[in-house]
Length: 345
Image (cartoon, rainbow, N blue to C red; front, side):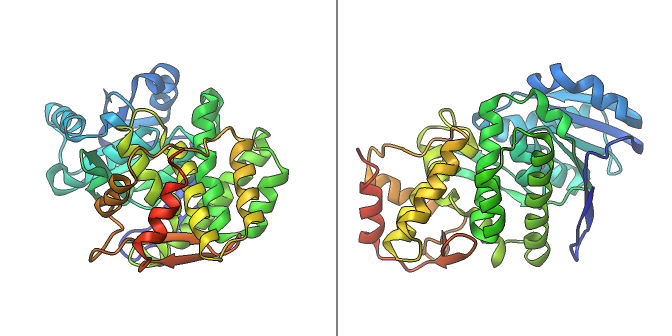
């Protein structure tokens, strides 16, 4: 299947289970991590026909998504004498995709890159839409650029070797999109298992179609694209507090969804029964739904380091019943503190 990402500045295709050959008459640098390299490097190399092909292996994980790792990728590109026609290929999960895309955006003022995501989370979310970046001590993805890939190849065969925890983390992003944009899809997820191949492919296609529609309408996240950050405002704080080492991104988003739902219930835009259904679906894939906040005030202050805060206003994406969304900004501090206090014990 092919899904067109139709953008004014640059359009491209997401190919699902259609990777046969990548023909490139230039130098290519594949950026990957040790795990993916061990499992799949021979497979990807067999698919690439290029003038030269080099492999750069960097450590994987949010704690390595930083300026030092980014610089190591750039240094290897210089060593290989890559030029403005060279192409980077991100071969890994969301972390590899984010860093490779960012490296491509700044190497000699910008070169092409291709996404070949190997995790469920990257296939349904991180690889599509052109968000690239790295983390620093102040927060997640605060340094980065919008830089669209030339193509995305989502091969479900790579998911066969994915650890269950990584697979489940990807489910959080699928569930996120269903809650905010498609009630029928959410209800389908409630009764179907994604451990069945046909169901998995359907869910990947559906999620990418949702994101493609949103991104095509709002490339630079100035409007509706912000809705894709449902669960992330809370989740990013959790990742930062735990130094990107305790939770996978999707796990932090799962907790963030539960926190956002409590806020939505407090504002009477989501029913308690709907919040329970969401939590049940998250638990179906063994995702965490609890978090103990050590300091409510510090947690609250970290909201303002998020990219989505603007003019000292924190933007919260909340479900307005299942299948719809609401964007809230001017919420009273005490309402937010009361929600956070519910997660202190």
